[in-house]
Length: 242
Image (cartoon, rainbow, N blue to C red; front, side, top):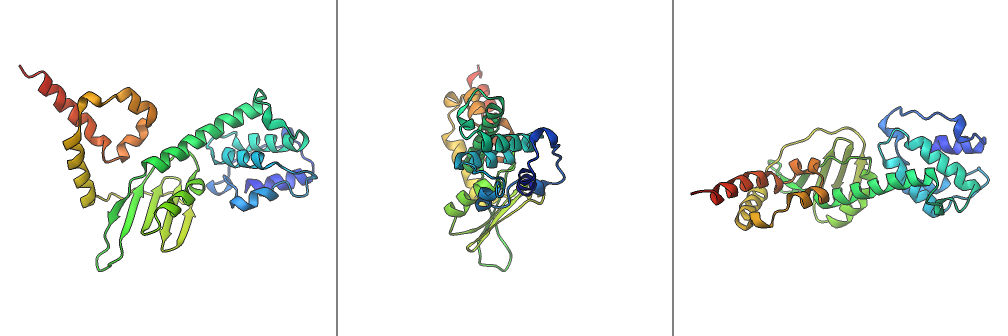
């Protein structure tokens, strides 16, 4: 884990310019647990501020190849410059802020656009729900508490190309094994399609605004958006009927 390597480097006083970071596996990407972040600078002769620790955590959730080197530079310098994070014009802080903003947006999108479908198991009375989502970054640990706290009355599983989040009874488990999409179409989705067609108003659709608010890559996984092109074409045909 990055945390273990960083702690060891700090303990031996190794400056950032003498370190070359390489990604070995997905398991190297993140802090192991949120509560363990605070001990990253143990033995380094300094204290890392809470806001710096939060920034480091977000940096390491990013997919940028430079995230490890950037995080270590920020950590190293923050131990020597306690007010470093306040210097918005600093190149490292500006770069870290940019990555952090992308992580916040990715977290927001996943909370907003995950759609569960019921998956029925033959011979079982238990209700299970399944979702497929494609986050841009390694954010599963960040969003897991949100889903666990919101969907407490059902068992569910969120599959992604970067891992999965599962809740079974009271336990919420995050894994980082690459998942394959499972196609599930339930009765609720068909009802939603019927409802969406009935309330669709082409005059109120602003595609440019939709694309700016909701990335196009997410459209294919939402039950409502796959209907929009079809209904827009149908509306245009009606408008031009002589």
